[in-house]
Length: 210
Image 1 (cartoon, rainbow, N blue to C red):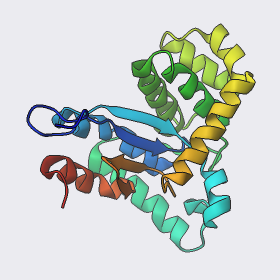
Image 2: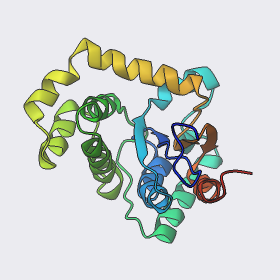
Image 3: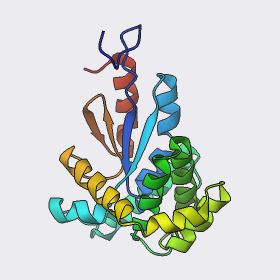
């Protein structure tokens, strides 16, 4: 039996969940992926990325800025949020820089993985449930402090060259793994792109793949 298999032959590897905080579909997926993982005894590794950097390689552009497709996407996001019962209010600035938020999550993740998940959700909710601003370090620190994270230490970390390099390394690794958008999931080596692939993710977990 492989080291990452349980006694019943099922893998217990975490689901890699890649997302950009400016991604509304990523926000919707963030409110679903833990429930799906829990059904199959899995955990989720929350891995923020910077789509702006990835798009320089893929040639893509922010979905809501694409002519014709953008207005449809906004309508679909709103409809999907209603379908899942997830509150939605778009921030005034879209897309927005999420560097401080992503750095914060990786710093917290190295110390308290559960808090990294909590921080990710709190940041996402501020942006897309409340239409708030998470672009600045100050806004990230306020949200982190509100869930019990040491804001003083986090403030120092956000300017630490090692933390900055960590995000760059994670972004490079994500692209090497084929991450081309948000949300993006890797389950036992199998990639799934998009919130509309969550049902595929669940079927994969249930069956072991097809």
